[in-house]
Image: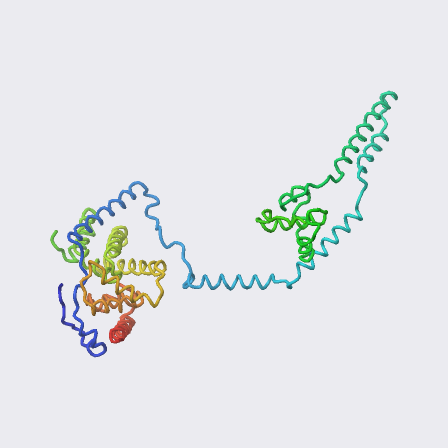
Length: 239
Length: 182
């Protein structure tokens, strides 16, 4: 350890006597042969630079670092700014506490009413089609063929109507043990059923008629399944 | 390689055919002071090794931009100071040691370091220096350990002599307070 105990700085003696009293020593040491190794490492590094400059004379001189600058204190303030912005957004989009509950009932009622007002008979479009076809006259068609063709057409339409009617009949619902099973028996989309009143929902869960599925109950089931991925694991109470 | 004076190095450097040879001499002459300066800044041997290599490689890359008005040593110390401060900034963000534990962590680290020979008071001094702001630390090390003149430190750091004197004075007071604290 080399010692340089003499301080040339008299000022130091006056303002920092403790520091002045500490001997200046070379307390940092290095492994043996370190500096010859350092020289070799620097030479190797320089060779790499020269090689790169030879291979890429156009872009190797371009600076790699410090091209993207930020204002002073940018990263120190970043977290706080982010927090403040999040809080502002939350405040901006805040709604009253029971807003969605009130909305859901109103929207659902409106939808049901709308469907009732705009409802059409089941075979309306099939009958329309028949009427339109029948009213079109083809001059070069033989009367007999015309009559045969319309017979075939009306028979086909009637058959289709019958088939549609049969399939439209509500079938006896399979009694289910899980909500997933109930979901399979419905063809309603979750998008239609986003807002369901919580009271109705609770009533449904607790009701004795749980396994008798009505259209209204199906809506609530779909909503529950859509909003909770584990919901289909829940079992119904079988009374 | 025998040691050459600054003017001899400059003559070698200005001749493009001998520029690489001049650089070899520069590395040979300055590797130890530059290394120990960096080591006092960052404390750890491996970190100091990496930074010292980067310093000389950057010096090589910037040889064409070297203006003969300043000395090679000034130029190298300037690069070494910037590299060390950049390293310390990055290290501060990564380490995440709670502020109140930094001193204890540093002191324990020095005690365990096989490349550190200082006694308890030396470790305490190093801890005090490590707590200084990075630029102030550089000024203190160059003045106290390297015994550089204020004018030279001013050329290295780009700070006025008056500001450097004030900075050094404050650094000394802070270290004194730390050393006398129980």
